[in-house]
Length: 611
Ligand code: SF4
Image (cartoon, rainbow, N blue to C red; front, side, top):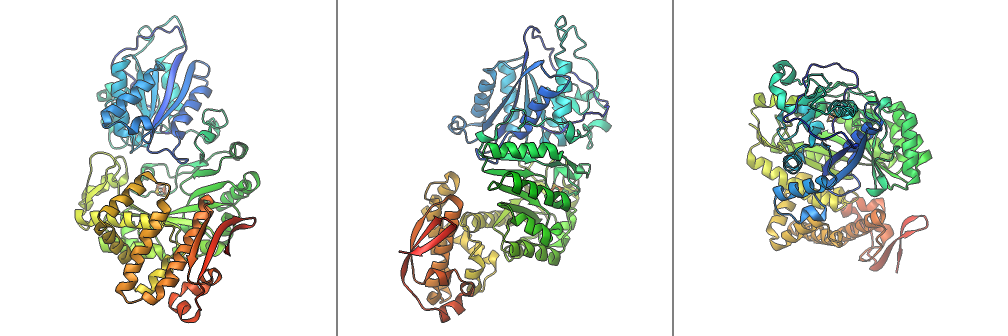
């Protein structure tokens, strides 16, 4: 559900396709719902929970409605077993109908847009009186494009939804919706009545729709603190520290935002983090797209986290240009990982999407993270206006030279309602009309190039990210005299040629079989052997295999405690020494020592010993 307006007076009409005819004899039931793309600690119905929490606490609606939070996941067994989208939509609608709601608030995103529209359609067939309301970033961008809902909310929903519900279901029990002034024309900020959209002026409903002004964060109730959302159920928490962004990357919904950051009050955040600690939540995903835009606040928050939630793992999104030594050391004081949007290593390409990059500054600041031992990853986008496949490959090479823990490669989405959506025709771009709105071609990036980039993305994800290759990747690449992007192109071709093996890998990637890390390592080693043999570097292979196996065993044990025993050609202390980063030098100067090594979780952390 999107963000809302508490104060702005607006000009839009409220109306509805058919009058509500429910008698007002019982407390109205409201369901706040969403469809999650996966079942994971990172997938939580936070937006829907914020709306539910707002309905419970708003003076307009508090105590007048029965509010339920209901979330579904595409990975729920009940949905996975269904073949078609229509069946999935019907299944969700049936589940919602069981509670006979009077209104359903849908939290809509790119990944659930089409299915939730189908759910609303099915729901209204089963329960004609139900009022369907939709909000969220997709709806905010284009509130009049959603035909299957009765109302759409542009902007933040915490103020607009209670205001709308109060109008739809007045508390005067003597009145019915028909006898009240419903449907009527009282304006509510950010609310679009789909049935009466024609009545609104083009100025309001054109490219710049009337949007609810943001609420002040200190006016919003916390869905965690009021018990609406229990993070223990999800094994993690999405923790909203701030709303808004000072940047205007043209492909992002924030490109037409207010360029302001509104921070949630420290008092609320301290209570939330104490609750997470009390519930022993293992991991927290921080929602603040530029966590370190305010360094003083960022450092203060890290100290609070270290004090209140020692041992809890945190994920942050950060801007590389604001990282310095002090901040890097502050991050190093807690268990955490940073995700950093690089998007492209070509400043000219980034200029086309209203971003800037100073490569030297970027590399220097990432060096501070490496020096402090902070885990971080990068995002890159392929298909950006002005970029080429060769340029994208250079971006991969630059990114991997900085030792990221993971590298995520995304296809560009031309999202409706963003500045890029306005600019894209002038760039000669073509893109999908429906979610996920992927770019289909640009004058510089052909469909074939996009397909090659997608294969590279899969190869990097499998070999580097899932294969936890960061500790050893640059060391094993160096003797091959290949660029990182060439290496992954070769790996993509290797996977393609693997035939049935590839199908097996895809199965593992999709369903995460228990032995997937073993299968991944087998694939890594098989490919590395082929590469080294093709270049007559067989003499280096024993050391290479030891390096891969030893580091993978340590990563696995760190990640999930899995202990393992491996056969090695060299002593593990030598393999884990800095000399092994130069494999040729290592092989020339270090004697072999065949041994078996146990990697385990000891009193002082991950350790190994000869067995
Ligand atoms: S991509 Fe990130 S930094 Fe850029 S405008 Fe969006 S939220 Fe802000």
